Every structure is written in C-alpha cells, then in structure tokens.
Length: 223
Image 1 (cartoon, rainbow, N blue to C red):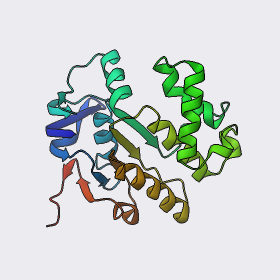
Image 2 (cartoon, helix red, strand yellow):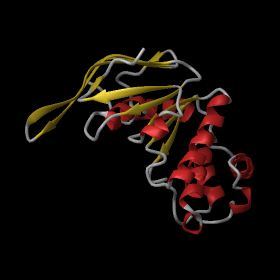
Image 3 (cartoon, helix red, strand yellow):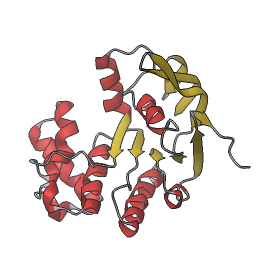
C-alpha cells in the first residue's frame, strides 16, 4: 500500500541544508496497523507529511496504492488525498463554528456530494463512532475524546484506503487515549491501513509493529 525507497529530504535553514530523512526505506502492507516513533526532530512529522502528500521529497521513490507519487500538481495531490488518505491530528482541527455533523460532512462537500446525501452519510459515521446523539453539538460542547472521535469520523467519511494519525492521543488522558486506539483498531480490523505517529510507547504497543526513527533513519526492527 505504501512503499518508500531511498527517500531523502532536506530543508534549508539559515542558508544551510538540514538533512531530515536519509535513504529511508519503508513498506507498509495493506491492512497493517503501524506505529512510527522517535524523539522530537527525528523526522516523524516530515515522513508523515510526505506520505500524506503535504510535502515533497528530494530523491527516492514513493508509491501509494501502486502509483508513483512524484511531481504531482496541487490538484493531483489533492485528488490523491481525497481518494486514498484520511487524516487525524493531535489538535483535532475541527471547525469551531460548525456542528459535529457539519465537520464530518466537510470532505464530502469538497467532493461535490449533494447536501442531503452528505448530511445523511455524516450522521451514519457519527453513529459508527458512538456520537450520533451529539451530531448537532459544536466542538466546544464536546470533550477532547469526543472531538477526536468526530475527527476520526471525518477521516473515514470518504472511505480512504489509509488513515494517517499524527499523535492522535497526544492531547488526551490515558483512558480516553485507549478508547481512541480501540476505535482505530476497529477501523483497521475492517480492512483499512492505519499509520500512527506517536511518542507514547504504550500507544505504539497497541499496533502490529513499530517503526522507530532516529535522526532521519529507520532503526532495524527487532526480530
């Protein structure tokens, strides 16, 4: 599903190149639940941004669902994101002036789905994450765990092939974090590929395998 080979990525800081990822190889099979761990500055966010088509790379190859992701226009990248990728963020990234249902329906709006249909589908996905009674509540009326479940419903609503979760439990207490991971586990068991970036070891252990980044390089996995 995700295949990166020989990926290099640098940024220019103060006129000097800062190498963030070095000859990175990563293969994630369809239906896997994978954790990506590493200290701050190890390259986790850069890796996720490349996989999520939010950032480019300098050299190497990246294939998503069998297609090379290289030199895409913004429109092509957006089309790939809409078709294949769902995003879950630590800060939830919900629109505060819209209801839970309206937040979940938003990706469908950008896909041109009719209003009646997108409202119906949004409520179906809120029911799936156990939040249908809160469909008309705004984010400020929801707990952190509820907001993250709304964000997961929003990520699922376009039926992507991959969920990219960037520190999805970072703003939550332990019990709520486990509930969110249970939900992502259910999503994965239904056949979706899930990639979780986390700095929390107990969260990583709930995934099938863990990729550990150090200074832009993936450390060998324990046998």
